[in-house]
Amino acid sequence: MLGDKDIVATLAVKDLQVARQFYEDKLGLKPDPGKEAGVITYTSGKSKVLVYVSQFAGTNKATAATWMAGDDVKGLAGTLKAKGVRFEHYDFPGAKRDGDVHLMGEVQAAWFKDPDGNILALVNG
Image (cartoon, rainbow, N blue to C red; front, side):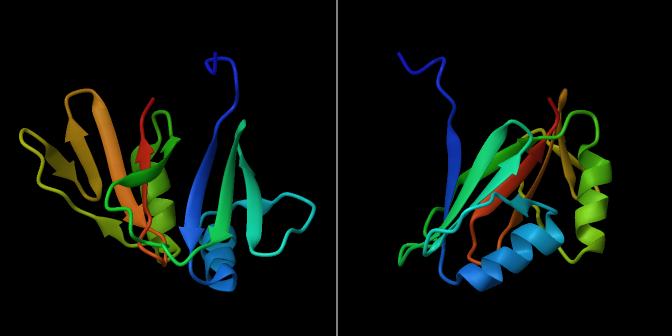
């Protein structure tokens, strides 16, 4: 039923201007044309990221969006860190870390937060 439909990452923020600076200046996303009050839509690869104003911003305690970074998780994490993005470090059983990248068998992942505390990730794949 929905398996052939596109899906959009939807991220709640408190301040759209602060979010814009983070998503555009630090992550390098470009806003799609068109303006709707309280909403910015970005294209990222073949996906969309919708950032919108909500009183519930930052209340999700789990990963909200994941970028499939291929074999460049470490390189992308380094580039983002150089732009001021701070990475989260978690203690997963059996996981090792190479800088900000968690290594779990074949899986490489790095997590960071936007200014509202939305947890975002880079994962190989």
